[in-house]
Amino acid sequence: MLLHPDCFFYYSYSHELTGDLAEIRGNLLALHRIATLRNDELGQETLLNLLLHNYLHYNLYDQAEKLRSKAPRFEAHSNQQVC
Image 1 (spheres, rainbow, N blue to C red):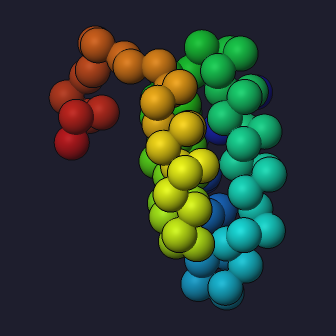
Image 2 (cartoon, rainbow, N blue to C red):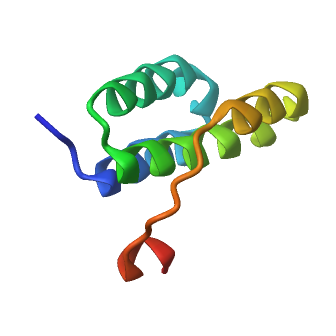
């Protein structure tokens, strides 16, 4: 079962509004691993952005840089992904 990337965004956004953003970091990492195993590029990129936002929100710059440096780069993007 693949979830639409919008679900990930609203999941993170709702926790950000309630101030519980740190509590979902483990879930976001697990979802990113699942998206990676399923070769879901759009899910991987969406979750990577959410994880980076999560790290930067709490000033965890070293962890954000480690994650960014190890993330795969996807060359082929549809117009929707570029937007």
